[in-house]
Length: 137
Image (cartoon, rainbow, N blue to C red; front, top):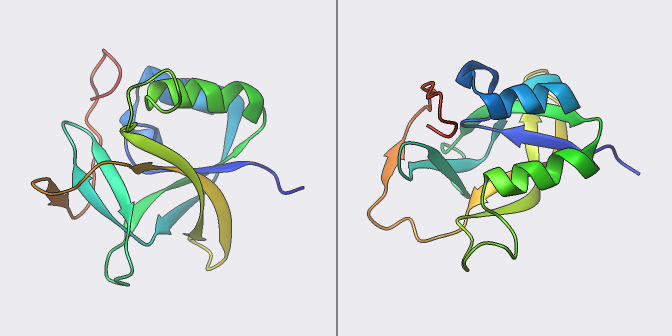
């Protein structure tokens, strides 16, 4: 059985410096910087990634090895408002996707992908997290 890994690209990254990342750091181990073939949009004050067939569309992020996925994934689902407790369609879906590691390898990792229409959303070339003490920026 493959270990559970997660690719994060927004408010869960190390440089976001917020409480939810501190929780991720407690239950996971940083593996590598990585990229995902997708397109990033400004949803509100936070990003949302969607898959893309265009090789020029790249989302930069980080991969973490989840040591206690049974604890961490439900907490992340809550944070990302994913699952049956939230209105349909959920803003994000958690799916396994292939991501490219900085060393040239690849891994299949969980990723939260934006799950609503992107019409009218502003594309983001590179996301730089901004710290907000209240949680999600």
